[in-house]
Image (cartoon, rainbow, N blue to C red):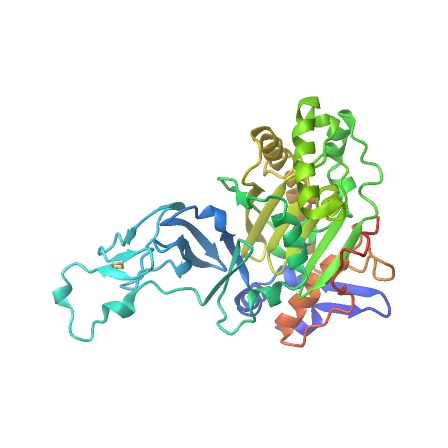
Length: 433
Ligand code: FES
Ligand SMILES: [Fe+2]
């Protein structure tokens, strides 16, 4: 494979093209696993998912079975989910609480710090048998940024905060929405589509498709008296460097944090205004406006999306084939959110973003349609140049170029450079609308 030819990037000319074979080939997928997923920090879960000692989540990241667990000592850990004896999966449930894991095959037993504590008929082993060395193997690196936990399979990777870079500014805008911290609401939306995983990276930060693709939703909203005109234009799209990107624009609808809208009903007004007053007290008017009155779709390279829109959705997806991906989505909410606000949030999570909602089926249809279109392989290139010659807005494509430039440098093993990456925003710089 020669990755060199897969991206044409000419900022001078305003030309940016991606070769469609990058979304069709098994060789590329294999190379992506080695050069992208194994060289990056990968989201594994949120601290709130592991509420107490022994709480665990089973996760599969980059094809590897893992256990994300809180040990009895309170520490968060990540292990490979495979028995040190002869390989069986140690953890066979998606989530739960466990003091110990007993392998169902020959009953070796591990505590929740990963130590091997029980071997039936241990006398059968010789002197070289080292029980202390046969614990569950930890994933090479585990770190968190304000409750978002990531693992890395490369022990020499840069630290997580450096990796996240300017994306931390946007994570802060979400985490700071609650004094008590944010939590993942129990339950996962799981779905899949017959499309290359990179198409969902693009789609999740694509303001250009919003109006035409999701027409039914806008009509549904308009019928309830919400004026969407103008909301899908303007705003700003940024490459944050390191492949991360964001789109941000004024909220055209109500938000549980903290914009009341007539759709919420009069009875919710005092509650939402109360939330807003607390934010103002803590962060001042300016930052509250930024947090509450703007919506943002944040992309953290290579495969994490946080949509802070009418709800906050954390979405991650994995390729199982060049033309197939599996998606997980979770809803994030303030730990102390009042029941009615939480109900509104969860309704949006399902109504717009859920697998059977107004948006996701449209997006699945669009992405599967692209994937099918790619099989017309005489047409070799996709165009991702929109906004290259102006200050990009949310309907431009700088955020997708941010992804592809990082992807391309990792795939080629060449130095990373994004000529459109933005300097760190300061609070003084007003958001362009
Ligand atoms: S494979 Fe786990 S005890 Fe044998
Ligand atoms: Fe969409």
